[in-house]
Length: 199
Image (cartoon, rainbow, N blue to C red; front, side, top):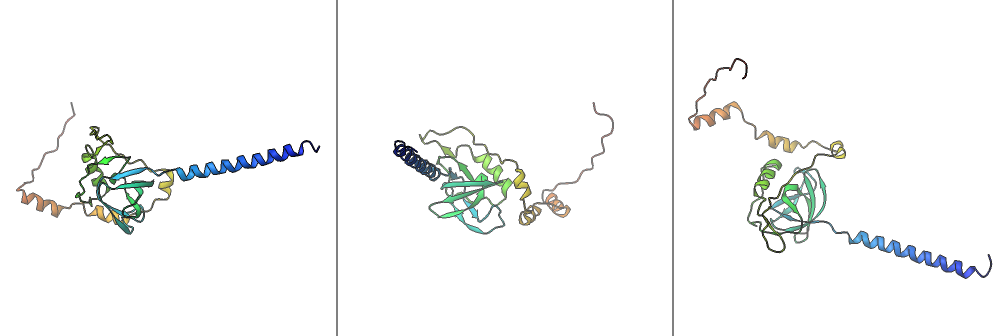
């Protein structure tokens, strides 16, 4: 290589190394700058070690507490609460994602009736829970939906026998129905079968 081009080549090589280092630095800073979305607890909740109520409870978070949301697994969300220093999983309907000022009653008790009952209760009460940062009350009704299971979630699904036993306690039987009807002075009536074609 001619002596004239040697300093020029060395300069280009040094410049390329410098630019490469800058790119790596910017990419690293961008990764650290990513902030987990925030949310607000709409009711007092038990925090579990994993996305199942049969796992160990690691603590409780009060209604109205702000949390960081890490991820989602089915009907569960992984959250972190800084004041309580708790990381774990809560039901999706117990967290409202977004930066809201809350009007949640801190005395509100935890819903222990299970996922579907809690979801229905939250849907009824969600309207009026939140105000925007400008203190103007939002009149929009908050809606919630639990997405369907993905293929990966179906493959990795495990039976939750604890929840199954819980569901069995809601079932009724003939003895309980008879007792209930006798308390209300109800009598059984035989209804004849409806025959003939519908009009």
